[in-house]
Length: 383
Image (cartoon, rainbow, N blue to C red; front, side):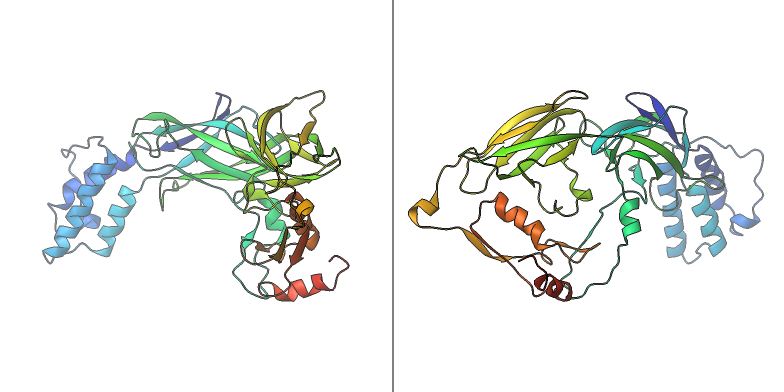
């Protein structure tokens, strides 16, 4: 059962029948050479409910030993054992309304009904999860392997929180809870197909190990930024923002230009804004190597003003001494950039970084990875 803020919403269950079936099959298998398919179980054979994991190991040892002794099980027997040992996962949704928030993470409880006493790691998967980009492989003309539609569909970041004091694996208890984290890139209604498993082949026969949930994501607030340099003039700053749980904002797996996924910070100019949900944040602001870094806390309220003011403080001024900073080797593609959904980024995206690091000179390369695309950039009006 899946729930928000302590309310139970989605149940993941592992039926007890698997262990009982294995007990019956394995108990008879060592006595009958004809094979499992030809067996007729005596009503006097006990059928105890046993923990699945140790029983499964015993069954595999029997398979290995019979093969070593020259009388291996038939393919049909292997299939019967595999079917009996299989742990099946089924998922159901409860009645509570699922609610998310744009550019934020909400926590849900997953109730695990573990009648088979499974101690494997519970995993979650979704086609709506994952990166919205493909990193460059150095090709001068990469194929379009990630479509714009796929980028739109990957609106969520869904994972099971398994850091201490939570466990990475299930405990084997008949009932336990795990925490599901769901991040939403977007606001409004978004549908997610969420599946759970404890390894290959654990989908419930005649049922499903996934569930389709229609979420409603509340809009984040647009936080205006006031960025000034040491002379009080408008400037561009590097901003590393973390929420109250030390998660980097915006989510790096969902970043596309002008924000880059390979670095934790983003760059914003005076008068621009950033969308953040209600909550407490910490920002580390800087203007590059010639400026000091300043850390400050701020809060985004549901209502009222939530402006973020950044005052850059210079510690050295090389131009006054006749020295000028620059970078003559700036990649706009290849290296850590993505090649899908676009082949790298535009010079104006790199200009934001040049200004945010207070460089006097910047040169964007137009050769190598994504070269065909970058030649078009070289011919554009942006230099």
